[in-house]
Image (cartoon, rainbow, N blue to C red; front, side, top):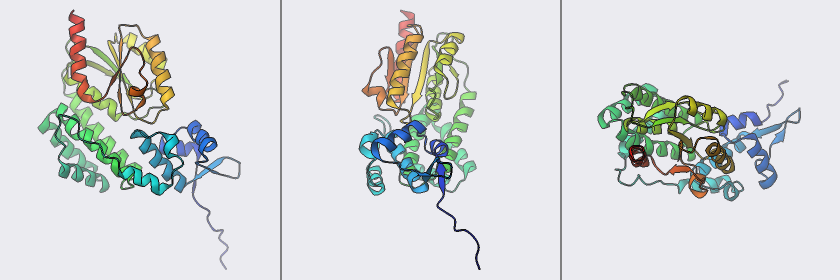
Length: 311
């Protein structure tokens, strides 16, 4: 006789889903009311319990949002429709840059799939030393980010594998940054960070690399710095530019309102540069905030700042 109780389906709490997908609890509740998805079960204490199928669909929706899709148009789609939509995402290489060697990209993605972090870091370091830090960021890391993201969307990578890739790139970039000499005194003092709710730091590190090689004196606070602390840090470091990075994980209203508030709290002579993949940066401009479409925009803006400082 078998007295074991059959195991029920595995479910995750709303807090676990928030950590797993990057979608806030408030967003999940709003979608539940507005779109009827996700529609969680309730556990023995009445708390929301999400099935793994729901979490997998939420991950895919999150990725599509980061690619510029609006939740109102995709949340109600079936999983197969979302997958079809994700297969249509293809970002061209940045203008003026060669499409990073596809064979190299596939080889690096394969290293991620094989969980060979040591070999991945060795290959990334080799490319960085051969190309130089600037070309490494724009010609290797930027397109490789796209390749990794596309593989994640298509279900070819797990979250932990994406994290392994991100950590490997960050290690290589930080080691390269540590070898650079301090920026000259006539270069802008740049404070880098993200708002609370924006946990992704790879774009921030890429921006720091591009700024540093252009002679900026960079101070990074890492990710998720409270707005008032950004103001205090800018004052303490005598900052000329506050550089912020955004992906599609934050609510567009939070991005717009946060930038508006930060602009009001900082002295007018302190510039705010905002970059990243969040579409709201270019759809809803904030007065006194400079949106950077790509990392290639860093050099002309640094040159503009220098020219204005000398005028």
